[in-house]
Length: 539
Image 1 (cartoon, rainbow, N blue to C red):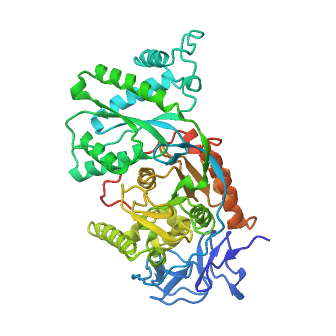
Image 2 (image 1 turned 180 degrees about the horizontal axis):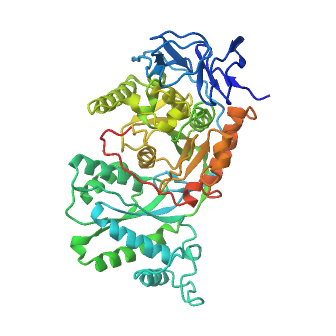
């Protein structure tokens, strides 16, 4: 029999409706029988006892809000009768003891790089240092995609075909008079990915420096074999900034980076001809690497949620938490981001930091971010979107405590600020906004070679260089949006499956995707989203 409602923790004074409930209906939770006094929509919460004005609301055993007026036993919680409130936090000297799961011996077929990182894909990356070059990036993208059989008409197509023919002279291109297809010449290249953006000049120098650090992380990402960089030549985001950051993080096996400076090369035609010739040479070199069996310890999984609902913290996010724990126990890495969505979960994360220095850095980043939001009249309490609220996430603390479940229970080995790159295997925290694309953009720049993205409402978000697997919190969204959902964790809500069983199934899909045997829906749909965070207020 399917449960009607759920008590998440013995300390909670609210329950969660697992399906639509009607006024007058009787429920029994944790041995307590009560009668509902209002209709309760699935995913929403109802009081298990009378709650007076000012009294705290508890979910997951933690404070998630406070009553603004009396809420009767069996009544629905809403934005009209509760407000955001979170538990205070402090540094802790207690030693965290983790009951780690048994390590896994799984392997996947990945691309081993010279520095020891392993890619789940093998991409060549093309991007501008400044928005002035976006049009030229788009010309290159169109030309390469036509030459590789994706589109038609562009003046540089014949040149690309000629260059590919010249570096692959042993291949037969005469049979059809045109390129036979990517798989014929670059069978070990998973794609050429093109990025555009609106930064690089005109903003603050700090924004340009941040952009260069982020793009350096993209080049260093194990899913990238090399890059072609277009520069106007006079912008704030100078190539030397990118080069300096690459020298800091590329300790072994530097990747090929082709600089195309328009003011040095001359005309647009000369710029694009140079970019094409050098990129084709780079593709030939990148094609030499092949997939090979690699231990699961080489996986670096980004943990993301977006379009969240009242079931996300019960099904999909705990599933990611279990997967994260399994990977970390096996020597792999996971990155938990979205700092505005950790509000209320701070103490648990502080307690799990492996050193006082890490805990202090986490607190500093959280508080600095929160203060910058408050300085412009906002705050973490304004994080839930209208869609979140409609589907049961009434306060930021409710949303955050559910979102933090993605991080499992492993100890935290490092705390990374935005654009810092992962260096320690294990569970890492990364300071990013809660904004889906800004966060996934940051995860890829920090070294994630695959991103797990939970959603209860549905979102098409993807990334240019990192496969993004969408995990639904409920059956309904998986059935309604099968073109964007890769995995359905709704069986946990319906009572068909446990979190552990669901995590084991998701791990199988992760290995298939990391091995190139499964293409993420976001990649199939070409959802290659890239938005750098300008460090302004973005929740």
